[in-house]
Image (cartoon, rainbow, N blue to C red; front, top):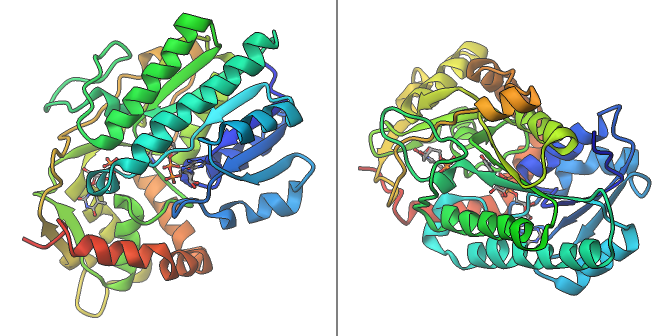
Length: 363
Ligand code: NAD
Ligand code: TYD
């Protein structure tokens, strides 16, 4: 079993990264320290880790504001903290934004990953450091789109369809190439759609929860028939932790929630759960807020994962079904009103305005 000591987490102030830092510092078999490098883009929120800062600040948790593309900064971090493990979350992550403006996706997701790999190569291979691991977090979207049947396996050819998924695919290829060419110890995992606490409300589930709470229109693209496989973020964090300890270097693993659902059904489920928990709004059930809008260009129809490999070789399986996970997520948003208010008063407002002026017009 691998022992992690000095762990560089990139993008730790984002949704999955901040959940992962909470998760890792709660594991009795993790005794190391975490260095969180985050640029604090619109999606990075230091409030996500306020409790961690208070509990572990400057002992087992260090935050550094900076860009993964900054080679000298990252090199300095590797030297100062003797980094042995990288868990690489930092990315531009939203498909709709990648359609409106792909440039930062190419810069962070491709060039940033390249820069990190270069630092790791010099520090670990030239320095002959042992027991290191570069763990790259990726997405099922690199495989493209499925029809009504079938599942993505680790052998499915890459066919990314959006600038986001193309940039993630490029970064996966670079990570793989550094293993094949230089022998850099790497693991890549590709995961399905995450949901849970701390998710920025540009993605379907938190956007639906907040709009349904406030009685605002809930935009559903096209006819809402597209299908995603949803995983509760804590289950994803657990899978990453298992792979960090027991994953085989040079390997790629699919992670999924085995919770497929059509978008319209996800949205209806959230509306119904909120009605049950809070009672309907004055004008009736929250489902009335559903508004069909123009479809996303190049919208992938369906994602679904075959998780046999991680199940059989690592012994990991998701624990949370979608209904239970949604209840926990809704409760989290209801009990973290100041987090929500802060998010809404900033960049999110500008994004919503810009977006509603674009392809999210009602049809
Ligand atoms: P997020 O957008 O919530 O967070 C991204 C974080 O990266 C933010 O804190 C941001 O400030 C930081 N960041 C962005 N550019 C940076 C840069 N140049 N240097 C340093 N930090 C930078 O994203 P997320 O949803 O938490 O996703 C994390 C990772 O997981 C991404 O690599 C994404 O591709 C992958 N992933 C996400 C999902 C999902 O459903 N959200 C599913 C599968 C894989
Ligand atoms: P999203 O949360 O953006 O994740 P991804 O595009 O990475 O799968 O979208 C999930 C699904 O929900 C996707 O099929 C697009 C759809 N969607 C809507 O119908 N309305 C929305 O407002 C958003 C943000 C997404």
